[in-house]
Image 1 (cartoon, helix red, strand yellow):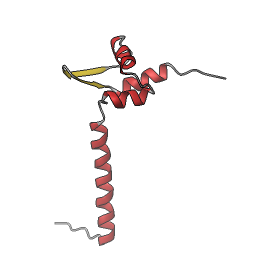
Image 2 (cartoon, helix red, strand yellow):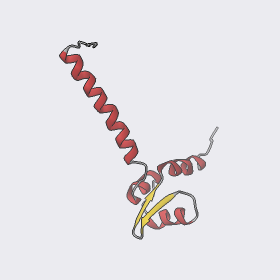
Image 3 (tube, one colour):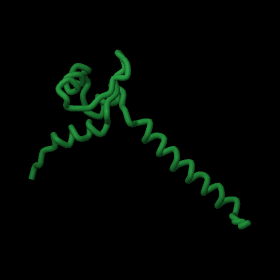
Image 4 (tube, helix red, strand yellow):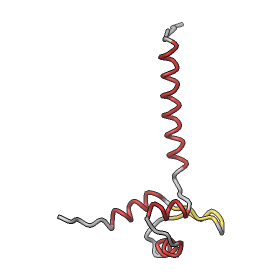
Length: 89
């Protein structure tokens, strides 16, 4: 059997880093889908009608797990914003 010795302060630092890393992964997984309010914030719009139009026109991806619950894909929102980028050189 092998034994590794580590100072108490170094041990707790290691634990803190592991918790931070795992928290980041959990938060990233939880943010796979955005609420309508979060999607509008990302897009810089204030009108739910505009959000619905983007959805209806296929400009952004969404998921509708039930009749009144709609979630938006943050990657497709970023792609949509990138497609509207203008070069001003």
